[in-house]
Image 1 (cartoon, rainbow, N blue to C red):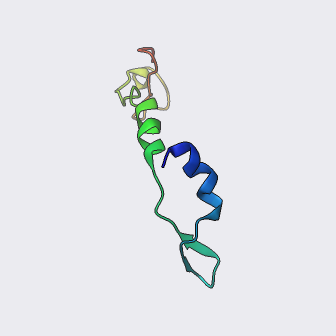
Image 2: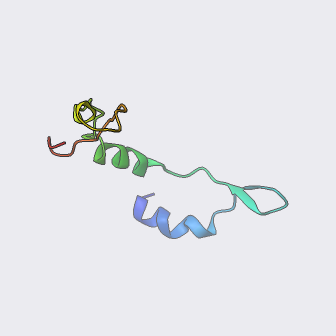
Amino acid sequence: MSKFLDRFRYFKQKGETFADGHGQLLETHRDWEDGYRQRWQHDKIVRSTHGGTCRCRGYTSPRPRDGAT
């Protein structure tokens, strides 16, 4: 069935319950996680020289976006 129709059926699904019916285990698509990971894939951890002249000389790891730190 299409993902569109699966979204409408989400609330009607009956799964295995636990914790006296307060929780429910469902086998659902988790394709959205791959899209989320790809969205933030450009972020990288780089070393910075900011601490060279700063009083708080600690290791800093800025996260650049679009090549700018």
